[in-house]
Image (cartoon, rainbow, N blue to C red; front, side, top):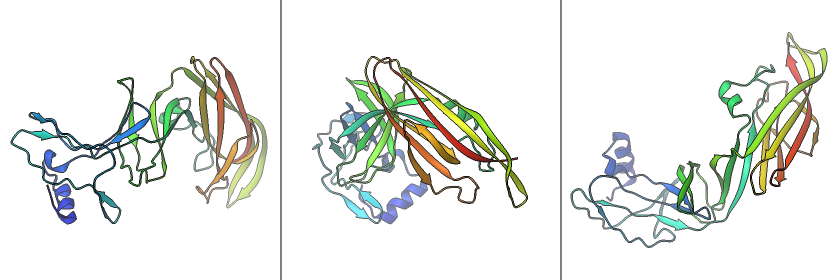
Length: 279
């Protein structure tokens, strides 16, 4: 099918037939490489295609769109063709990640997060960080992760420009146990009055426990959102001040740690921070 950009966009808005729309997919296969591409369907017989694997033969750049023209395609009734757009081998890093939400609301009140966030607050994910070494972007699309011919996970690859990095989650790591607690260890009452509101300054101590029950060593990256002022952490956290909630009395920080855990090893992370809590 050959058509101009305007006709293409109009066909999307009109809904079109499934075989006319085309879907670009990406799959992480065999773990060491990303396979991207594919236009086709599921009905009728399949005509064997013999694509030339490697970089895309031709692309067209229209503003922020990357188009992959396919020339001289002829299909008989009920036939389906499959044309991979590109196949590349890219470097990757295998790691585990634990993301912990903030327990201070936008109204500067401390409490449990929403249920869906609380249920995920002690989940560790086995993940891949992929480097797009090509000059072409990866579109946002489903990703399938395979190892030794077996599917081990599915996720979404977010839009990744050329030369940038993207993260794909493989599966929840049931062999890595994570537990976290936060305790109040001090309080100065009515330490601040502002615009008719009264705030207490509360000192909170957090503790993170993580144990690697797997038979191999792992690299674990912990990310903790925090409202307030960090006083101390052990081991030392990387502390990034975020430009979010600028009108709140408490600044927002992202704390990150990188740990190496041997098989059966347990490690503990502690942090202490002050937060102004609305009374």
